[in-house]
Length: 89
Image 1 (cartoon, one colour):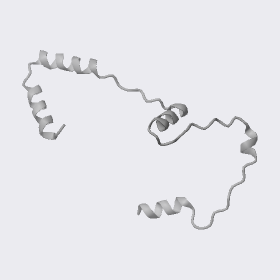
Image 2 (image 1 turned 135 degrees about the vertical axis):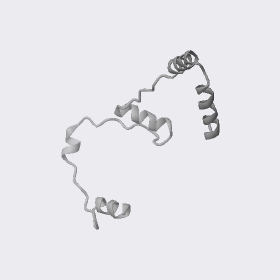
Image 3 (image 1 turned 30 degrees about the vertical axis):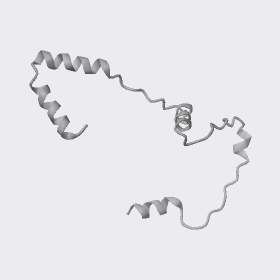
Image 4 (image 1 turned 90 degrees about the vertical axis):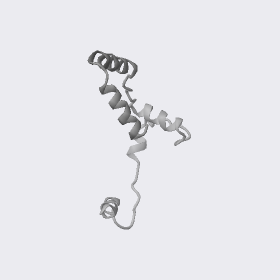
């Protein structure tokens, strides 16, 4: 909706009687239900899959041994945090 349409609608609403404005408000509030986003990890992954950002949802790693045996890789150069800060300036 363009600004001119919105301005026109606002002016028309202002021209309504208080009872008509109240009825309009009730109608709008009853037709709009706030969406509750699924903020869980599985909900997020499902949204990524639906949008085609990922091709599959990987299975969860339940074995703590996997994490215990991880070895960090050596990276040369500046830390990524420093590079990000420099690029933002």
